Length: 476
Ligand code: ADP
Ligand code: MG
Ligand code: ZN
Image: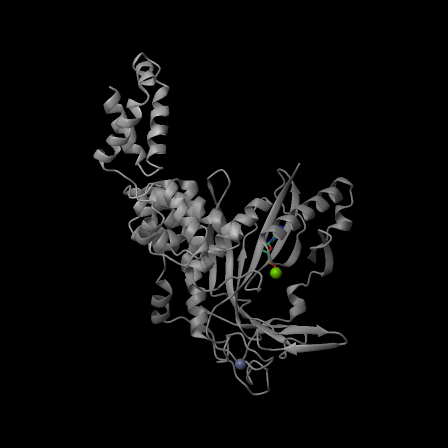
């Protein structure tokens, strides 16, 4: 029996206004090489200056994961040649990162949490992009020098599910902190997966393989499963030494396999040395203060939702897994919706409809204010749940968001007035004398029949709670 060992390295693109060492904008630019200057083009004599905003955003992550935020850290040059890096080195933090030794708690399927140690998070400059176009290759340096935070975990994960849970937690954390948009398709959240196996009970780690740049949770899972199987088979066939090397591999989406890309570089291959153009990054009091301003993070939200709002832990996890969803939920409560019913209307009624229509919560055609107001009308019995669904369906197709007006136009106001309901009940009972007799003689199942008839006669507008209550009175 083998145990899987996984450690992750995640590159998060920080959402600063300007690049890490110059004042070029990080925004999308229409023209190639327009967001550039002598510094990010690496022209001789141009000097880098550290972007304070990037440092504060890195520190924010540090505080969020209970890490040490170093008041002094430094930058090194990692030498390699590639056309998208005009300086022929990358500026990174090799000897002393700004953030070290933290922890993240991942949520497992059985509802428990597991602690994953965080080795460090360091600042580094991104490269530009090479673009291949027929026989030509072109270089666009708009991205060169944009700030990345490389976040490195300890090898603490033991399954693909744990690795995915880790990535999801980290992803939602950086989104709550608003330090990155973390869009995986656009490459602002890229992940390298390190995988090894070892016989159960053995303390020493096996040889690790690094799978580079995977851009979806699904592929992370698939790549790990493939790699674990490949390494296990090699072990069982007695060819582990030959076939499992410390190397960099790539996940091939089409074939569903990992393929060797290159042998793993050793640190020495990069000729790391301190960047002589950059002094140590010294953190000021003002920066610490700014970095410590924190939103409520997912773990704290779950705790509050469960303990204060009284909602189920599993629901709290679903809602807080995504910042947009949590904010949506909280805005519904501000509109007077009660927590438990708000959960149902958000997670099943609204999300169900959004999924069908192909919208994310961010693009929801029905905003939180409107859904909150609708749910409040259900809670106070102005309309029934069924009426609420009708309004929701109507709003998915139409512009109007005036709930009161919609209740009117769609004729959904619920009758809760005793007099009006009793009138209907009495007619129903009068025309079903035989059944009333049977009921009184002990055939209690008939109660449902009376409820159904009353609801039907009211065209569904009677408040069912009231109908039950008044029927019981009349029949006793
Ligand atoms: P490098 O920077 O060369 O990729 P690091 O020592 O920084 O190497 O480790 C990178 C990642 O590999 C870390 O996330 C770490 O947890 C993970 N890792 C280290 N050893 C193993 C192993 N035996 N199996 C799986 N992951 C490992
Ligand atoms: Mg690495
Ligand atoms: Zn620049």
